[in-house]
Length: 132
Length: 403
Image 1 (cartoon, chains in turn brown, blue):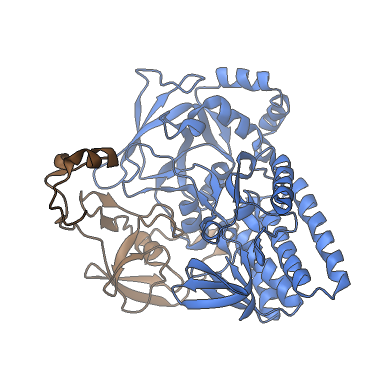
Image 2 (cartoon, rainbow over the protein chains, first blue to last red):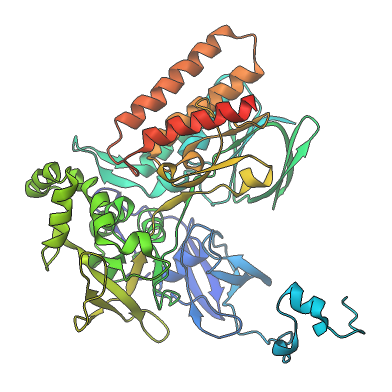
């Protein structure tokens, strides 16, 4: 299946082979064992990169592997932001890596906005601002 | 309505569930991970007696007992909110809400991050992540790596990686920056290293660790620490070398290492590049307490216990009626202590609910003693003053109760 599996372990013994499960990651088909998470099944194939940072496009992979850090989030069966380290693989599951996102809400007038409440009080806001 | 909902199916949660089922309480155990066992699953180390502590086997023993009592354990369930009801609590999860009279928080611990430049590259992971990949999923995290951060946990897991045939270049400190203060000072790290030296198979190192009980000896040991590191299981442990950065384009390709003086300051001109394809960052553990905060448990910060901890008694009850805690949420200790605490918490819940059973009170008292002896016998002490921390916590509980 891949050379990243620990088949023989001096204390834990031979890896008990369980049912093979086929799933899709970014359009390509991969197999893993029943009991694998999406993250472990992909790492067994040498795949480390699971997404890019939504704004910068920098590559990211697993960090904590137990569900705390959310670094490994991917899209699974069209649901976004799912932790690959906590999700067991299933037959025909469709996994997509996290992509670069548009940033439509980024302010182009950041330096004109009040940074503190004191600045806001000093009248740096516009009188007709609908958010006041 | 359940008698008790237990959040966390690690050693504490499972043994609590068994104790509650033995007294025929209506119990539900929830855990976010796909398999029960928590961090116990990944554990694998040799006891001083030569016997192996195999977390998977230990988990299976607990599960067999739990199954014997027909315990309802549900995995893949994330608890994200707890609401106070008139006579109990509602646990809100991704699989619906559960109402319960009593609640046991056995959520365990999380790993502290130690930011090093380049740490977001794929191939950089926490040391615990590597442990789970290796021993639970049986997947190699890479061909050759390096461990950043020298402490009890990272030394134990480095050994586990070696056992699985994963090569490690060495263990070294993170370079000093405002976020790495605790972990980048060689003297502080040496104090911690001395506490695990008895785990090393080298008679020389064990011999040295006796002397190192005196702090002036430890200061000298840091000053004259060998450039090649001190080897544990054949792997160099460097406390006078630090990792400045992790390098690579879209994955880890190398790290930059430099020598540091006894105060952790970089020695200029000593940088070298080391080719690795993975890096494990080890910043130690802290109690995972969000759910206790959500329901309004009062907290204390105690360094000896590993961080902010919900106030609780030695019977594992919190000042909130019907809310109990057990395991690493109460302070960082070994799985054996967590297991003993879980049993105690389960018995406390049963005793508080079934007040008519006089002998239950005796079981609770015995369980309190068992926690203390398990602590005293622990092979690995995560903090040298853990017992002081426990005493302070008991005082905090009594104060909270009387006020």
